[in-house]
Length: 211
Image (cartoon, rainbow, N blue to C red; front, side, top):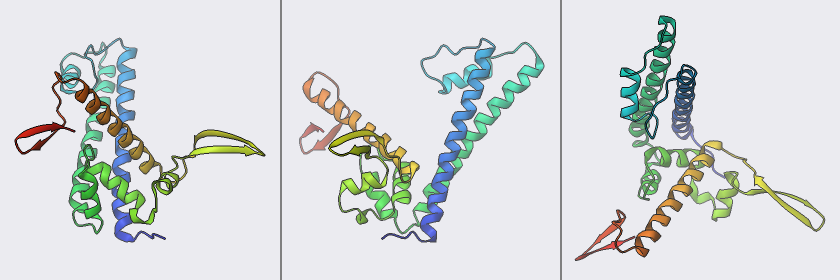
């Protein structure tokens, strides 16, 4: 039985606050995007919100009436402030977790390719002491990633995942698995295509090995 102490709960609150701030960014960006679409302003780039898109918002978007321009600028300000809030949360997470008793576990997770501070802190703060799970099945069940089951007599029917437990850990674990699957696919492609320039290398004495 794992019971989080006050410090564990404080780090978890900080991690969840950062997650909530990310949702605010998504909502603010959607409102701004829909507002511009209603007024026939479309960004021609391949992706939204890189530097090129931000320059387009600042230099190319002009609306017919001052009232509409005020609304546009307020939407932009809301998006910018939400992004700054996420950055502040991430800085605080980095600072406070270094003094946390479970920080060695966070560092161990960050040793995995693709696992950064935010992901590692979310997993550890939501799941706590990972040694309490005797096998991966217990961890998956605790996170609500096991398929639901509807059984009657000899009939068994599998449904969607149960989604029990913490949604924060579940989301991060799903994204992490997807990222690892992408890396493995890239490695396999690299090994099959000797002419391909592969960025996933381990430096060995006298040679390089694709991993």
